[in-house]
Length: 571
Image 1 (spheres, rainbow, N blue to C red):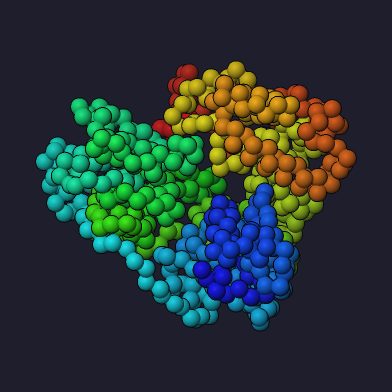
Image 2: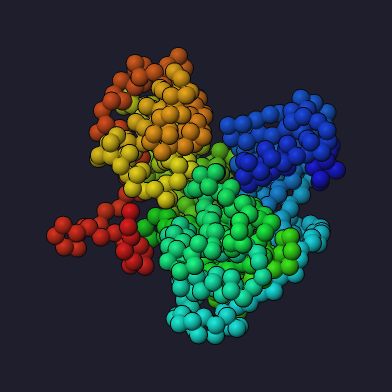
C-alpha cells in the first residue's frame, strides 16, 4: 500500500469516514505483520489507537480530525506526508483541509501532500496546488455495455404500456413503473446475475418493493433494500446469494456507488436521481430533495456492474440528459449552511476576513451564503459585528455539533437542565436512529414514543435513552431485553452513550459546569430542573428557533406543509 511504501518520520493518511480509517489501519498493520498501535495507528471521533513508535509511524485519521489538529498547528510540524484519500467526495471538511494543507506547504518545506481519488477532477486540484504533478494509475474493470432511454429500452418500455414523461432538467422524477418493467425485462431476457437498482431514497425503494410484491411471480425475486438507516444486519443481506434459482434485486441509494462491492451484481438500473441536501438562500433552510446525479456518479454506478465480471447498465434517462449533467458532484460547501465552517475559519485565523478566506477554497461558496452564515452567527451571539468570536462563540465551537444545538446546550447549563438536553442534542446530531429498522416499522416507533411522551418526540427519545441507560448500567442483560422489547438498537444506544460522554467532557471544558459535577447524576445542581419537560423544550427552542417553520392552515382544521416546489410534504 502507498502508506507503507512512503513510511517516513510521520505520515497521516485521511479518510472521509471513520470506519474506513479504522479498517485501513487494521489492514495495513496486518500487511506489515504488526498490531495496530505499534507503527500503524488511527484517530477518529470516539476511538483512537496511537502508534507507540514515534520514529516513523502511520496514523490514519478522519478528515475532520486532521482539520481540528491543523487549526491548532497550521504548519503540521513533525509531519512529513499527508495523504487525502477519496477526495472526490468533497464534503466540507475535505475542501477546508485542502486549503489548510496548501498553506501548510508554505510553512513546512518538508511536508509532502498526496491527493487520491478514483474519479477526481484532476485538473481542478492540479491548478489549486499551483500546477503540481498529476499521476494517473489505470485500474482494471470488466467491460460494461450501457444503454440510455433513447436506445432499445425506450421502445420496450413503451410497448409494455409505460408512459415516459418529458425529462425535467431541473429535477428528476423517478418513474416507478419504468423501474419495475426494467427489472422484469432483465429477468426474462438476460442470464443469471443480481440486479442493482439505484434509487434516491426510502420512499422510492419501498414503492418499488410494493410493486414487485404485486407481481404474480413475485416469489421468484429476492428483493433486498440498501439504505443507511437500515440495521447492519439488514444491510448484510445484500451480500447473500439467492437460493433455488431466484433473482436477487437490490434496491439501493447511492451508498452502493463506491463503498460496497457486491460480487454477484451483473446488471445495473440507474434512475439518475440522488437525494441531496440543498440550502435555500432565501429562507436559510436546508431541504432534502431529489437531484440529478453528476456524470461522475453515473460512471460510478455503471462500474458496479463490471467489478467482478462483464455486465450491463441501463440508465432511465436520455443520452442528451447525461451530457447536460454536471461533470462532477457539487461540493458540499456550495450547497449546505456554512455556520460551522465560519467558526472553523475564526478559530484558524482571527485576523482574516471570512469571505476572503473562503474565496481561496478550490471551489468557493457564494458570497451570499457566507454573508448569511455570518449573519446567523451574529444574530445568535456567536460573532460580534466585527466578525470576532464572542465568549459564547468560543464555547459553541468547542462542541462538535451544529451551532444551534451547541447554543441550546449552553442555555441548558444556565437553566440547569443539562442531562436531558445533552441526550436530545446527541440524538439530533446522530447519523443513525436508536430504533431498529425505523424505515420499515414507523408505526411501531410512533407507538413506543407516544407511551413515553404523547406531546414531544424529543422528550420521548430522551426518556427511552435514560431508561435504557439505567437498566444497562445495572445489568447489561436487562439493557438488551429493554431494546428487544421496544425495538431499539442496542448497538446504536451504546454509540449514543459514547457520544454523549464525549459531548459531556467537552461541555465540562467550556467551564460552564464545575468539573466535580457528574452530568448524569440527576441530583447535581446542573440537573436541578431537568424534570420540567416544558423548560427542556423551551431551552431546545432557544437554540433551534430559526429552523422551525410553521404554515398557517389553508382551511379550518387543515395544516398543510409543502416543499419549496409546492408539493405537499408528509412528516
